[in-house]
Image (cartoon, rainbow, N blue to C red; front, side, top):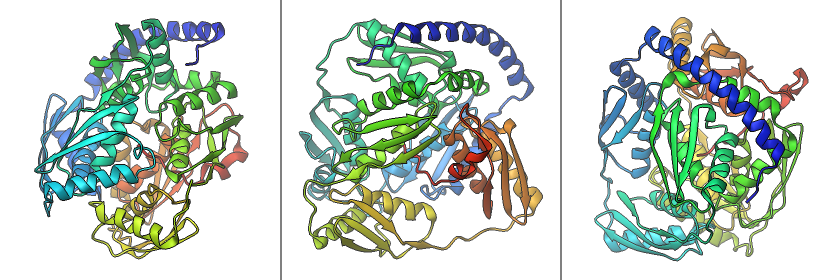
Length: 503
């Protein structure tokens, strides 16, 4: 693993000193801000229920939401495990939520026998380009899948669980896979790398996070701005040599959506530091680490190149780059060259089978055709989210080189007066812990929402646009500019490039 040079440590020390001074001020001003606008439990419940109603991945009618001093309890039923997890993530991403207790029970519309479900789970693990080589044992009992075996990293263990949760009929997953820790590192070395991982992740503001390591156990304490940020910080802390991660002392305070730390970090980030951060992220991505992906950075613009044998690896590399602090734009020039390109008919069958196993799109009669590894999709779905999901499922099929998505959907816009739409969009922006709503201006004309102002990252810019649609926009004109030391008014063409921001 990379060991930071002395100059980086000096810079870090200077930043930490400023952060300590900022912490004193923030706690005082944050307490005042919290008193100024206290978030009531009923307001949190209302905000979450609105999000659940608007989210196409969740059937909100059978789900109940409770809150007690910022602790949210979800109960009720869902017909698949992905919807259960999606509801939890929506709650975690709501301002004022300190933690989420998920008691939703998964009740598939059509339960599958133990043998049928075991075969489907085994098939999913073998079909996935990353997990096909893992030696995982599977037990199934009434929809509950137990995974056993041994993998090389915590990330590989989590990937197996993610793949299994995407199989129709899975009600719960008990992940008992062992991680074979092949390296032993000093606590200080682990601490330095965890701090670097937190600092390099745009999804985490590490200004008020303290890292301690004792006997290969990472202990995170301090303050984060949302429950989802807390969960991401825990993920980042699983570096090589770590035996356990504790986050009990990492407190969620909604007012901690601080931007001073990130602004200073963006301004100090060099192209070489960005490049090294991206390559470090690849090390912990089981879809990418085994490939030799080249990274070049020029004034914050990242160019990825090299060769991988599956499309999922290419897309994962792009997501890793987009989630790295200091990145302003990503050009993904990675080539996909499968070891064996299956015959067209075989690849079509693989994609069609993957669609049938997905609990969201199995009901749609989508047409799949293949030509030399390129998948062409057509047909009709209900929402743009389902169209994107179909594309993502096809990308994950071994042998797929590219996907041309011609699936159609009908967007039904529900009319609102402009004043009401503006209020709803502004509410959406405020309730998002990933958007600084104070820096965003909202105007509405005949249902068309125009966003202007600035954001710190492209992720924040895209999230703001998503929030506008969730607020009921007929169309969104995104004129938000990304505040960045490399930004110039002539770069606006790059700002409108389409991005996929995955989990």
